[in-house]
Image (cartoon, rainbow, N blue to C red):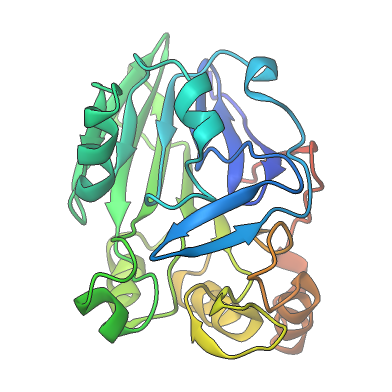
Length: 275
């Protein structure tokens, strides 16, 4: 029997991807409105909106998928409140930090590296996708941490069939490194796309500095490239460093004839993942 997948939006890039007995938490950010997320090198951004739920209100979790180590994706509330025995699949950089902090089941994945997790009668294969969180110079100077996207392939533990394939972009720009994804994964059901046009250090006021996540145009470019049947836009309005609102992405998607692929998911809302 084929299970059905769902996505629950908690806020920012935090969500619950569920399939049968499996529930994955992505990029846990549980700071409250008014609290600061620290981004390194003296940079911070103040959260504007509360998460839909607290850590104590989460369902039982199978694992955590973390795109990178930044204070708006793994914060002090996640650090103190999450079960330290949970598997965490992330970059090598983030896994090293988490292991030192007591999350001994943290696993660092290189690009295209996979791990398989079985829960009950379902299985998920978690594979690190390429990504780059900012311009090349920022990566070379280590101003920004390494980032990964993730491919989540769900199915029955009794067969090798993939019943649901979900791509989570992570905090990447639209870069050449992404071009291999559709070659390796030509049939993607759902894309969870991190947007916001995050611009450091000031966001939109003034909009000056380095853009480090996709804006509406780049996000649409990524959708055209990776070609998911369903698109869930996230990471658009929680912090002051965001400079490209959701309306930018919606407008660009409509202009390119892709508007019907978008599933808008409100804070605290659960939507089905399409096959």
